[in-house]
Amino acid sequence: MKRLMILFLAGAMILSGCVSTKQEETSEAPLEKVSLPADTESEKQALEEIQEETEEATTGKIMEKETAEEKIKPPEVLFFDTYFSDSENRGFLCSEYEKPQDIDLNELYYTGAGLEQHSMTDEERAAYEDARGEVIQYDMICLTTAQINQHLQEKTGLTLKQMNTDLDWIYLPEYDCYYFQVSDANGDFDECTEVIHSEGDTVQVRYNRYGGRKGMATLKKEGEDYLFLANQFEDEVYLYSDLQEEIRLDDSWLYGEFSEISTGAAILYHTNSNKSKGIVICVNAGHGTEGGSSVKTPCHPDQTPKVTSGSTGAGAYTAAAVSSGTTFLDGTPEAKVTLAAAKKLRNILLQWGYDVLMIRDGDDVQLDNIARTVLANNYADCHIALHWDSTENDKGAFFMGVPDIASYRAMEPVASHWMEHEELGTCLIEGLKENDIRIYSEGRMAMDLTQTSFSTIPSVDIELGDRASDHSGEQLFQLAYGLAKGISLFFEKQGR
Ligand SMILES: [Zn+2]
Image 1 (spheres, rainbow, N blue to C red):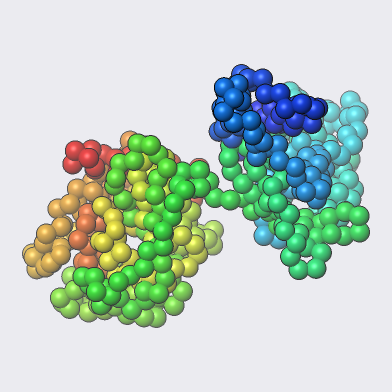
Image 2 (image 1 turned 180 degrees about the vertical axis):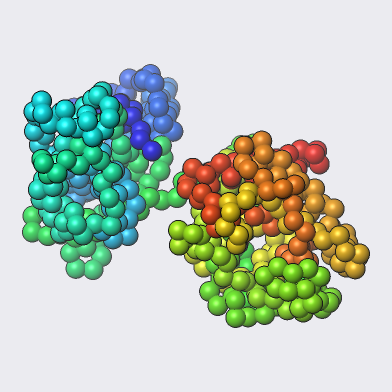
């Protein structure tokens, strides 16, 4: 994802403009009203604050006019403002990594990292165009292996060979050089906000990104310079929700006694939207409970056996409290993908004015399928569990419908709720279809699941694909968007 540099420069000019105005002022004259186009929320906010203050000052109510941007920063925060603005360092804030080997080299060198560019000879240009199969249209970035190694060595202590990511550029061995055409810029570093000293020479630097998002870089002092160790972006969810609550299971709740793993907490995100719908959606990222597969819970609240065969066979009285899930053909565990999709769905729903009960908000939550279901029953208006199937033919999405078996449909709470499960499942498939997601067969497979067997609200296990399916960020977003459409459709039909 690349964003235009112009936008950031405009932002930087607005903010630095405020600062220099302040510095140059000797008297406390009110700031002039600014009416520049604001491109991001933080800029808009900054502009609104300035305008409000100007109005207050001119009416003589309040003469205090120091905004957050104008506060004097500690010298080391100012140091990192400059340090991260330097093109040699800026690229290290363009990807997330927990160790320097995982830095995304394509993001790091996207605009050349400020390294000296040699002018390409005619033969070199011809060799590049030949390798690329296209004529050069934009500015060329050319980095020799020696340049990259020197830069990486200085900034991370590593060489190109030690990195885990590849530079997807054209490489010409005869020049030992990597080539890339750049038409825009990446990165969204705005300003540093805090420097935290941890163990030894390690510092953590918190910073703001444009658009109101935040990040934190971890660096280690090495002589006069720093080595980059890690970089994380704060989840965008905080743009959409200022208030989150931990929700824990209460054993006195209906069916709570059947849960075996219930020490974890789900998180209830309250929407920031001023058009709050007053509807809570339970988003349940399937799997992700350490130790869950070696604990058993009853299949049905009335202790009858399972009526269909899935990961647990028909006739079984108990099933894994939480199974470990499948693994994608590329080796990615299902639990990791269900969480990534759940976060995308959560963010969309919050933006649309729904509150979201996130059953699992990290890699592990100590809540089994019964605890998850009972939490949803007590806090949410519907329950959607995200899964991928264990087949490997990329067959498309479908929901787990309620089996048409008289004894099962007669058992409570299934008897009172199976029709709304079916209705929700049908709406989800409708939403996915509308978003051009491939659907398996009729979009439904009948299955006796713990979730369905204990649900007292509309509740669906949806299989969004299988082990062979694309699980890129873009695809997960499309799936989440389709599900959100389906959820809206479901509540619209109910007149909510
Ligand atoms: Zn699953």
